[in-house]
Length: 101
Image (tube, rainbow, N blue to C red; front, side, top):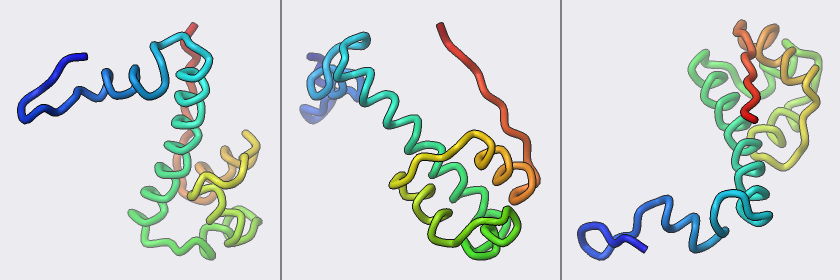
């Protein structure tokens, strides 16, 4: 494990130590959960940038404030069709996906 200035550990070394090396089951689970977390954060940031409340966004896409809150806080799974509706109809954006193999 590499130590940085002031006995700090690099982010990659921290992840390796806590979740295992890339490719291990524990690390893969962490990476997947982190991606889901990022989706909620991106939606929340875009919503706030457009000065929308959760309730206003929910009304635009035909869902509830509670559901938007659960997505933003990563406490609910989101269907791809709902995600696409939130991005396009609610936020006026485009969803771009990629697959790394």
